Image 1 (cartoon, helix red, strand yellow):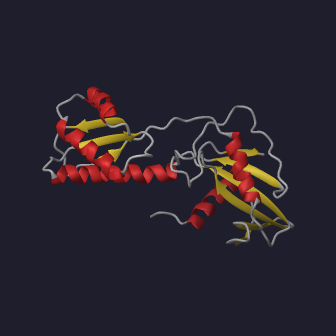
Image 2 (cartoon, rainbow, N blue to C red; image 1 turned 45 degrees about the vertical axis):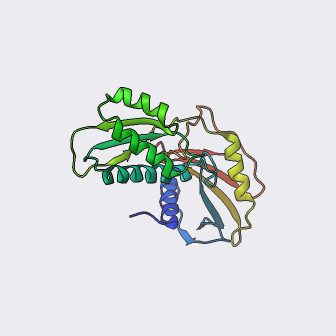
Image 3 (tube, helix red, strand yellow; image 1 turned 180 degrees about the vertical axis):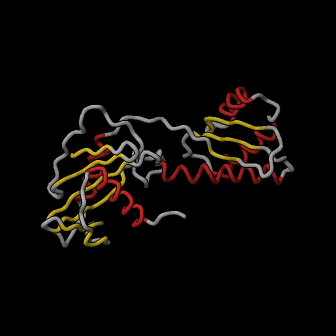
Length: 231
């Protein structure tokens, strides 16, 4: 079952506290204009939680926008293939950036390509698929009959180094909010290593200090590695 926003925030908060050895008692899990959590540590500290994202989630190139499109295209191409009388075969797809063409057009091209090229070996399949369909980065067909068949995503993501300008942009965005009800405010930025829209390499050196007039402390927490940096 998909977690709610509040459940995700509580999960990240608990993991962060464990990584830092904090044993706070949560006074309140809040909604705006209050920060996400209020803890009692001889004073009321409001802790706002946000996720790091490589690209703003509202942009067309963001993983938040791209991932659902890929899945819908794969599902639609598979549906077209079956309606055309195609057999129960497995297909794995990797995509480049999807920006200009419609999902229906891309799906139709994938369907036609799979239908017409099932006899090719898989090393040649990807080569010719890239030439025929600019949105395709990888295509693999398992020609043996399987039931039920699956046309699945096999997305490959390049892991780049964290963008400090993007990190600063996220902090400034949170500083623009008017929080109430606390003596001090902290910001916790979470990078979830399981999310390709967030995962980036952290340099060996410490992350730079980013001054803030709103937040007394800013923490950057990378899950999995349980790395915590104070910005």
